[in-house]
Amino acid sequence: MALVKPPRLGREKPWHQDHAYFDYPLGTPVLGVWIALDAATIENGCMQLLPGRHREGPIVHFQRRDWQICDNVIMGTKSVAAPLPPGGLLLFDGLLPHGTPHNSSANRRRALQFHYAPEGITKTTAEERMKHFGSEGKIVSC
Image (tube, rainbow, N blue to C red; front, side):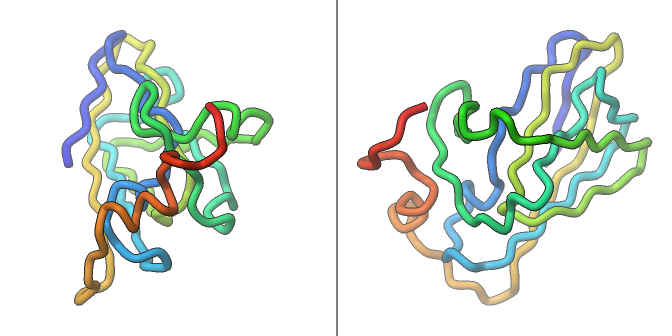
């Protein structure tokens, strides 16, 4: 997938787990690969990560500004910026919460993103995925 954040216009991608977008059975390893084509800086919206939170498993996502983890779940958690030079590569677990802020710089930020899962995985249904990642029918608020 090609990702582009235009100067001063590139919107945020709220906190999320990539595994929440794929109909793979829970426990399927998903590897995210993010390649910077331009320098990814704090000013132009480089990726922000929540180290170690992938060990906690699925986090409920809501349809708010995007398909996302609620901000109040993330508040108070120390995030780490992951700036990269052009050609820099970030590998991460599909359950790692991450997001990108808007691009407030005068420079565009382009990247490529790929996801890998083991060969031969039988996909599950969206309904099954939503039992773990979806908010429908759960007593939670955002």
